[in-house]
Length: 125
Image 1 (cartoon, rainbow, N blue to C red):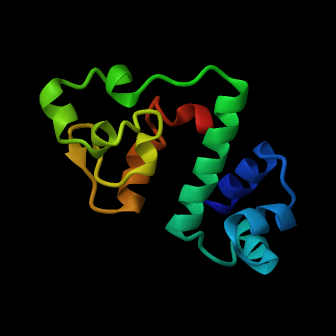
Image 2: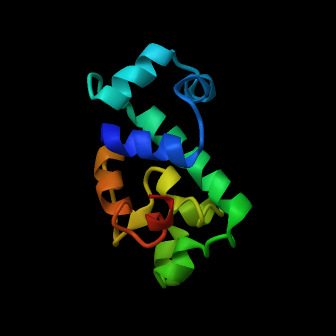
């Protein structure tokens, strides 16, 4: 996640730097560092920011369809996918090991490259 993306999501959540620091369980200095680009944003912070904005979205909008419906996944792929196993098709981007674009990614960074271009996650951004 880039510092500009972090800032954009914080504004979308309508939270001050102090409020977002409290939600993330971190210091306000860390938030300043993330937004200024002085410190890279750790994967767990990025994941939490997307989680918060996804919960806000579902309060104000019609809930999204499950990823396996949107992506038209065949039963064989669904059976092997953690998003299907945990019935998390609206939050597939939150779970590592999902079989997106027919492949599971090795780590969060690789996964986010795919997820940020996907129609399941796009409304969050």
